[in-house]
Length: 189
Image 1 (cartoon, rainbow, N blue to C red):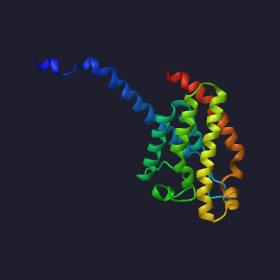
Image 2 (cartoon, rainbow, N blue to C red; image 1 turned 45 degrees about the vertical axis):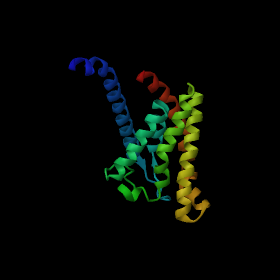
Image 3 (cartoon, rainbow, N blue to C red; image 1 turned 30 degrees about the vertical axis):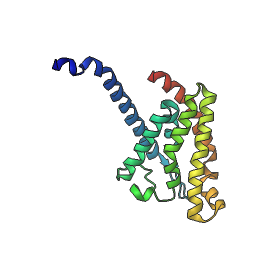
Image 4 (cartoon, one colour; image 1 turned 180 degrees about the horizontal axis):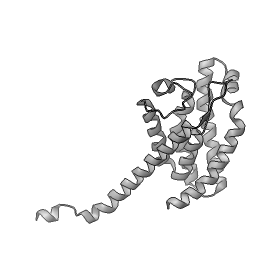
């Protein structure tokens, strides 16, 4: 009688192993964002460094989709808020980094991941990924420039510090993320 009331391990095993696998994928994806964010090129004329963090966010979102990409990016911010050294080494780290010159870019990461992932989920191919990446970059710069303009009290100065020096690099990052995500998505299946 007691045996019939309890679920068997056989029925729970597929769900729990799938959940563990998905959690592992998301944790690894957040680690990809950490590594990308630590690869930086400080620029002497701007408080915003050139980093591969946003490339990593796009890559994760285009590969994993909206929900898992959002969680990976949110975990990344959580690690940094707890004081772990995950943000660009060019900044102060921790909560201070989430309130400093790059805060608008950082806070945009989960939104970028969700939006780019959502667009990528609606189709397959390089062009779809490219569109998703461009939308992600628009969100990135809306957040980053919005925050910088509040700090500098000028949209022109915000663009000088946070947009113009990065334009070419961002085009390259979007194209690379769009292409790489196609291969990665196939390998995860």
